[in-house]
Length: 358
Image 1 (cartoon, rainbow, N blue to C red):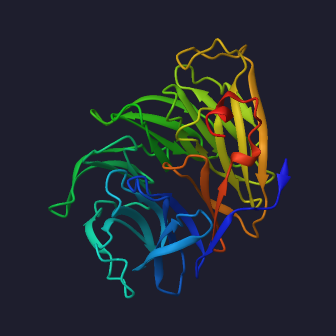
Image 2 (tube, helix red, strand yellow):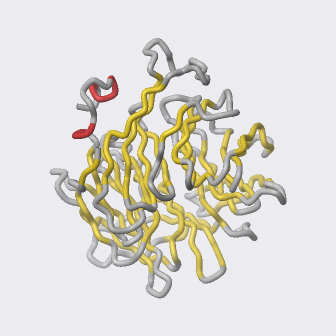
């Protein structure tokens, strides 16, 4: 099913790639997004959905010194977030704090709480543990994984431990297991590696090519979803990593981002360089299977494309569900266009998932 966007739009001044849900803001549906201008001063926008749900309002506009390649919001403090940025050939990362009086007409400058300055390779992402208050951060560059101890009150971050991925692997990203604070998954050009943060050693790995995005299922501790350049979307059971348990076709060009719904099991969003966002449903067909069941090659899955949001004029790189209203999501295309959409009109009423949303 395809169709134009019926969503709520918001325009950034410059090109952009990353958008994040402000999970810690429990009173508003909010997102943070950052720009990627080579020549102009870049910006971070704090965007909120109006109380009537009819428009996106800029609640804060802040200058940022460099091009923003990754942005993540702190899950337990709505004023804190991290960025990965570049200036020419150099890359950096930092944790920032939005000033308290950001609602005034001339917004004060962002405050840098802590630079994450131990990297010597190109930084790819910063990860916060998604499931609650935690004083640790993960940063990943092409060669290493760093575990940081963050003290926002003292405005400091110290490297607690680090480990090299080895000369044969160039790290490209990762995800922190929401069910286990000690486990992080990292991606490379040809594989996924799982790390135990207590020892900073690999505990498992699987070979798979050209993975662009990875996300844990927050409702099922055994499930992982990945997006790859050409092979689409794959769903994995972490207890048996030899092959995916289900496959979705993805996009007509590269599948760039994939996100599992934070509340409703089986709902998946994907974004691609074909200027589209797809809404999928994927679930084992057998109603007797539970989240603890081991899926295998004989397990039949219900897989369907519920809707394709195609009202974009550029590649869609940024994608984020709303934690507060998990039937809403925000997308960001490279031309700086933010769109917030509802999935409610596209859910078949016979889905068990749909009955709890509609």
